[in-house]
Amino acid sequence: MSTARTRAAALLATLALLTGTAACGDADDSPTLTVYAAASLQAPLDELVEDFERSHDGVEVVVSYAGSSDLVAQLGEGARADVLATADTATMDRLVAEGLAAGEPQVFATNTLSIAVPPGNPAGVTGLADLAREDLSVVVCAPQVPCGAAARRLADVAGVRLAPDSEEQSVTDVLGKVASGEADAGLVYVTDVLAAGDRVEEVAVPEAARAVNDYPVTVLADAREDALAAELVDLLLGETGQRALERAGFGPPR
Amino acid sequence: MTHVRAVGLPRWLFVPAALGATLVLLPLVAMVLRVPWTDFPALVTGASAQEALWLSLRTSATSTVLCVLLGVPLAMVLARTSFRGQAVLRSLVLLPLVLPPVVGGIALLYTFGRRGLLGESLEVLGIQVAFTTAAVVLAQTFVALPFLVLSLEGSLRTAGERYDVVAASLGASPTTVFRRVTLPLTLPGLVSGAVLAFARALGEFGATITFAGSLEGVTRTLPLEVYLLRESDPDGAVALSLLLVVVAIAVIGATRQGRVPR
Image (cartoon, rainbow over all chains, first blue to last red; front, side, top):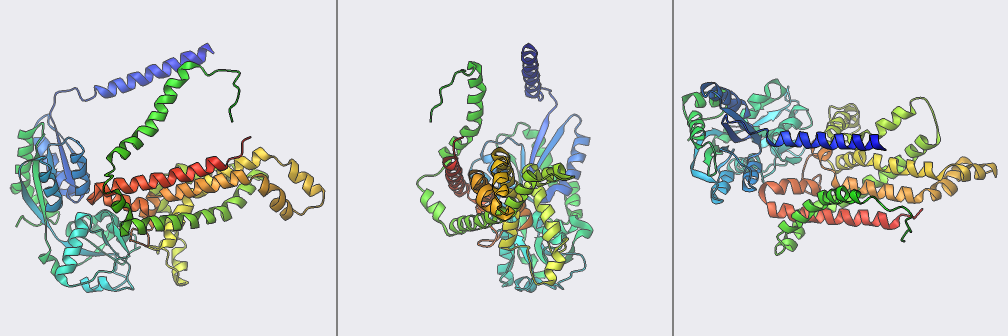
């Protein structure tokens, strides 16, 4: 009985210790810059963040990548960050409307859609018109998320009625279903096709130039590191940032 | 049914018990507080919401039937026979209980997907599973089956084999024993197992989105609709979440009521 009690007491003490140390984990003084960014930005941004940390001694940059709407929702619920970069202006507008942006968001990159097909293009997809074919398994993003809104705009300007078999929550889900061969074709960003490497092939969509997505970035109203945040935004808009974005397939701001 | 308790509970037990209950209840309360009540009827009766709810109920019912058809024999084999590797089989059958649903979805994809283990043969037969309601049912059955097996196996072990042995010694065939003795004896366990399986199927999300995709009326069940709405219409997502909670509570409540006191 008494050993059980000692053991329970020891367990409780350990728990208290663990939670205690976890609570004071962020007590050190080195500045941390928190960035919320659209998932599609991961490749170029990881690279730029590394640059940034190298040139700012002692500064740690933490980036949270997720769907743009998700990020805006989290910030609306009180999540704290210094910089936000989204995959379209509609989601950024929601943040601005809630009064959470410091100043006017700036467009730093553009992205267009493209068709991803499994390696070898087994279904012989040649262009956007094929995505209306009932005999193909076509996957797009749901209209509620930025890549889906872009898909709908593209279908509209091209005058094509898409017949998707699934409307996914994110562009990575679409890419996954194409890469695994479940879908014959999927609408994703050009940058995703590039990032996926050999896992998918691209069928270019000439109409895509008429449905371009703008990527805006802003410093947040309650940023703790606003000077550093402004510097990171400058890096994105500057020559180094633009070169990294271009390598990842992004277009320059219009 | 109140029991006379000879031994009281130690007082201190109530503190962690209350904390535990709070941990479960408080988030529900918080959600209810966020429901936009004035728009609630409109939000839960919208076309997409109705479509998703109806699809969820339909597929969950189908997968529960599948769970009973497959799970009763499985539980019988696990509870009433012994063979080499039985312990391993039991662990494997229960694996979906602890597996992250998205892992289950990936496993299903590589089994029934177009390029999966069985997918190519199915394709030859003209059966396509991916992006169909059948894929939703498969995903739900995969995650819900262990609930039925676990519940029924426990019930079979508790019931023991005495009556089965007596019936057999009186000349009843194994099938008659199973039908007339074993099943009626363990019916409460079977019912609560089936209800649990239904509830689990209703809440299935990860395997479905990984394996079945998301299309209104075909594969977008209520949990998927909630996830999608959360991106664009947080109020709608909260309202639908509450709807799902209410259905789940009703289902679980039904099984508690049906339980026979021991």
